[in-house]
Each structure stands twice: as C-alpha cells, then as structure tokens.
Image: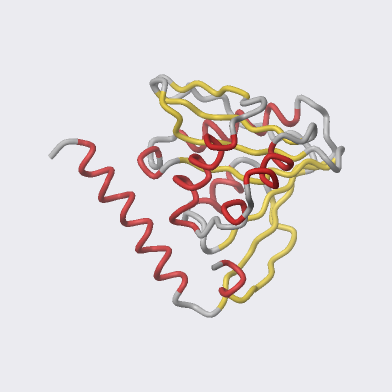
Length: 191
C-alpha cells in the first residue's frame, strides 16, 4: 500500500483518540514556560522543510490551517469567530504566524503573541495529521523557540491539554519547557 493510505489511517486514528479522550468528564490542562533560551542540540532539518513568516496571513488560509490541524484536538475557539473578529487577532501588530512547508505544501503553523512582551505566548502550534511522526514537529518547534528568543523576551509560555496530540506535552518538555501549573477543566468547556 502506498504512503498516502497509511497517512490517512494515521490521521483517522487521531480522531478516534480524541473521541476516546472526550468520553471523560474532565480535561487536564498543563501550562508550561521557559525563562531563557534552551540549549538544544543542532539537528539537520528533515527533508525539504521551509518556515515562512505569514505577515498578513489571509483569514481563509489561517482558517484552513487551524481547522485541518486542530480538527482532531478540539480546536474550536477561533472557528467560532467571524472573519472580522479573527482578523483583529491574527493581524494585530503583536501577533505573528509562521507556516511550515514541506515540498512547497503547508504542513504546520505556529502563532505567537507578543502583546505582553517581555512575556511571549506560543498560542497555537501544530502539524497536519500527515506530517506527524517524521520529526517535523521537533524541528519546527526548535526553530520557533529560537526565533522567539532572538527577540530577548523574559519568558515564553504555552499550554497543552489531554485533548492535544499525545506527544505534545513530551515534545514541549524535550524542547525546554517546564510545567508550572496544572488544572482540571470540564470537558464541556472544549466542545
């Protein structure tokens, strides 16, 4: 069977995993931070990856990335906004969006918020289902972290939950984030 079939099965598997996680009454949310640039070993980029800042990203392109990446992880907050509301957030002077490309096709995105600088929030970070499991996420996150620290913040923070990809928490920790708070929220807040 070709690679596409296996990728489709893997992408569908994530949806089932999310449904299983939704069958619980609660979601565990972990808040992570780092107070300085981590010392991560240099690694060669996986094949043909390119990260591009998406200044003034078109709303429809942002929605596409947000929905394709977040569909299995209950990313719903931005989907509920109308185009004007979403544009105010993603086109704000203190918001940056980077897009990860593989062989010219978009496979991930990162959204950073600098509104409370010198604290910076990694608001969204993810890959399309077909791009997971190839080392793209670690490379993209490492590069994103380096770009943020090049601006000399005091703190970088992110949050993840048990609805996110099962490897998300571990990846954040491998890249230098440390948990500072854990909360349990009702699953109803995420649907």
